[in-house]
Length: 311
Image (cartoon, rainbow, N blue to C red; front, side, top):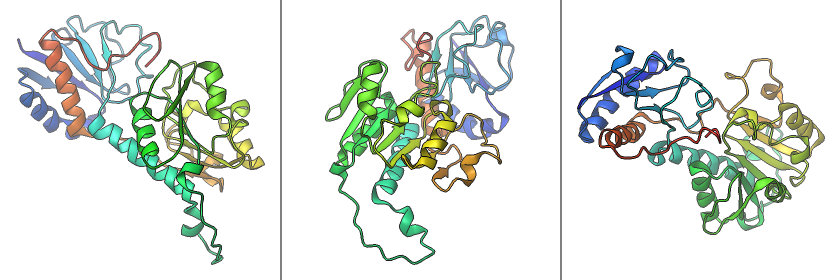
């Protein structure tokens, strides 16, 4: 059987993905037709980005699965017309490795106090050594594939790492907590907190005035996860009060971040333009091709989204 695959994402993505997808599908032994346009009743799989033109899945009467190009699925998981399996992007080779590198880099940056030496217009000579990693507790909120990978990397550098998730998880040498009571324990006294949760109604503003107050004085907030995880006003107040020493933010409630947003000008905020972990076409294409291969072979799809949980 020939698998009819619709690539439905922003037009600029097709130029990046066409060749890698074809190479990956060929390598997986899939007989396929891949295009950006085809009659909806012929489509078996949609390679999808939630900002694509396809928002009504009703005409796709033969659809077997929607394969998301991104890790985040909040833009599609609630679509009532989508009644087939939805797979999120889990790409350890590309997306996960990119997140590990970004998170590790910024944790080390703040742990070592590098900003004071990189930007030092007054030529201050302040020979104060930072603590060693085992003296710097780090908390990661979100222990999915990305959170677990970052936890292992930071633990390997000697940081005491606490991970929190809504449901119970286990990672060797990492203190893992879950549930409402576990959240307070995970945040209490943390000197660096990394946000890697999905965006759901339950995680909206999970870092707010109350939870920020649990952090150690001068703590650092690092958010490469999702913008709605943070209460922006509460964070700004905590920064102004000095309870939070710095925030490095890669994701925001509105993107691109509006030019008049106070994060841009705040001296204790670093803004990066949603670059913490980009989907890499070659490795992401191999993940997609494997799921199509499995679908055509009658096997279960990988990385399926739990519609009730929202991720």
